[in-house]
Image (cartoon, rainbow, N blue to C red; front, side, top):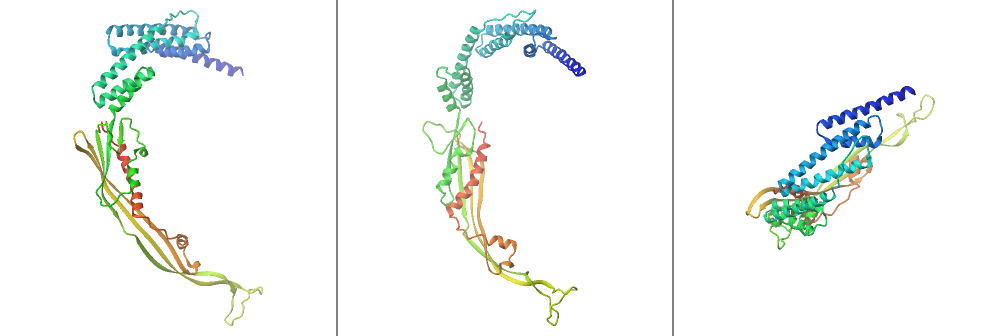
Length: 388
């Protein structure tokens, strides 16, 4: 027990020494916040431990250095008088306050002196300056009146919203920037096949909520809306819809099988029952031949839909990209009927005699079923689109 305790103490001391050396390395590298984080964690556990004096000394030096460094940076940024510096100034003041908040619960620390400042006014003033900068920059980008600049404006307004959620007019500015930064895409369905496209298929293809698209800057419309300048267009062209006629075919087969059907006595050539060595009558399996006629019926009908997806630049009135559409839906049903002895049937025969005749789907239903695959192709096309 004493040996284990001694080993544990050695490991604890070694661990403390290693943490001091690690902090000394961080200090030499200028990674002052890392020194402060490690030292405060160690001192929170034991302010009077074996290595606490070393950690306090490192903490004091790192704190003084980083505060001086940040203050010098703030002075420089303020003298530069660049509105864009307001972001860095605000976050530097926040960092200065966070370090003090980390340090306060530990004070006082033996042998060390820490100068703490009241940064409340500096944080509030720099935050206000930063907010005004974000709002002004957002408006400046909006005035450029381009899609890309509107998206930049949205970024500034979004930062402002996160910083000050109730900033006057911020929600309206976000809506405006998003609207002006969105690529609106007008989708048209054009039928050149000579066949009627089911209304439900049209609705399904043009219901973009079902495609699971997650593009913040792209919006698809199936109908043109007033007040919107459409940048791109997508034409869904149906060039060919072919529906094969209903087909029923039959094939008949005869099944023949020798099977066991009970037993009978073994007779000699004189018609007498043969006995075994003990005098018992000998029995043998009775084998018979069974027959059955089976007819397989196959129902078959197919529909093929072909077309193209055409992406257009509406501002320049030209096609950008084109991809073929094509899918086929097949209805097939096979069942069987038999006459004769069921025992003559094969395992496959037994499976198909359980099936029944099924009414053929209508032409409209066939096209609708084929359209499910078209939705998959269209969804893949939309997901791969990159407008800008």
